[in-house]
Image 1 (cartoon, rainbow, N blue to C red):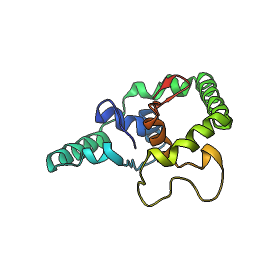
Image 2: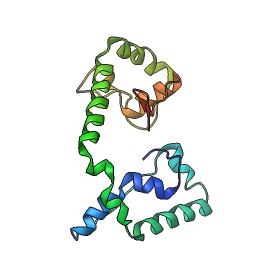
Image 3: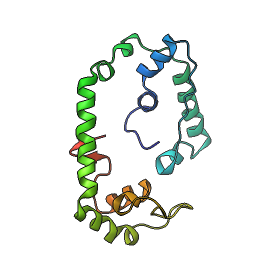
Length: 159
């Protein structure tokens, strides 16, 4: 889900990593790799029959492509100390952001006025958390984009 700046192969590898596929293969497990094409980026891939054919062909090639041996020793998974440090730091940054009253005011002041209703769901959850956490992800990201905040960047780290 979401746009990907590279090739289809890179996008599919991002969604279900070669390391995960290799691990399942080593254990004799069959995986079902599912992907969602939603929103503006998703619909573009199916806008014409030629684009739809190319998209599905890329998907088929990826599904049946053997896993690269190098992916079995991907440092992202083998150096878990670094990965967990990164994850914890990013999570802590997000936690601080969401409890910051200014962030809540920013989203509250602009979320209803800058974006139009999209889909069948309301922008905020009716029950559950309040403040920024009550905004649904699409509404949250749309508001940030309208404010020229790169929604794919957290703590200076781009996705």
